Length: 341
View 1: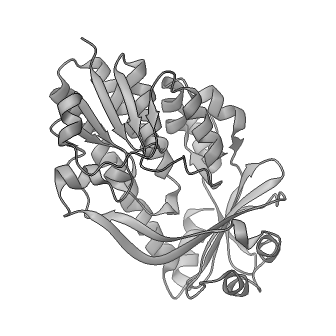
View 2 (view 1 turned 180 degrees about the horizontal axis):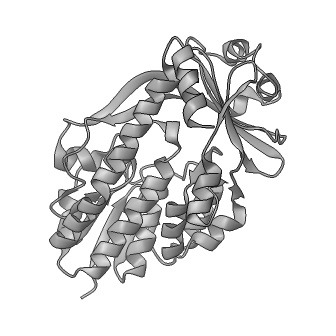
């Protein structure tokens, strides 16, 4: 008899889980509380390990068709002085492929194209899991940092926690050719490619609650930062409060329920690994349930593979956030010069 699974949440992790389970011979369906997919255009970094997972899911080729390589990115001071170079060349040499960046809508399109006959039902809010378990062998919680599935099976001990920073994101209609991050005192500005002729940027600054205040916060920083802010329509900017899941979960599974992505380990964006870890979760879950007919054993194996790994990444991202935000900056900048030559 064909086993069935319902995935709650149609983000990157949920869609990837549905693809993997369908390829494993399961009958899967996806429930999404929103009326349509969120298609805002921030850039996702796709590490070589996540690229390999997408290849195993049959999505790698479609992803690479719209992705751009990420190379030669540096950490700078506000006056433009380089402090160090991100280890992207080292990653490429070790993995045999570069780090990639892809617009969120393009990655969603690649995943949607691989769903096949998996039903995707919009406007379906889930508040519990009992009724879902009555009709399915497996429930996958991929419903984000405020996961209703997580709360239903693990309670509210772990939940969203603010870290005290607001992030602004935008896409400028020109290519800067200069990428990486600039770290100031309590402020940070990042630039990455996203597709030819466009630049993805992101910024944090205290007490910058409007577009004018954000522009003022970076007015005296090195080029092309003021130009990026001046030439990006504020109506297209995204602003959100940085949060992470705290404390770390004791397990990613509970009975016949498994958590993936932000529902399991939402992290600050400083390492750019949110999408990667969600993809790795989804592929690992599908692989374990495909290779082990005993579902409880398969879910324990999934938890053993992914929980500590994902939580280490989340901890590293929080630690980097604190490091970037540290004051005074002299010691921080000296450490960057020593470690990122």
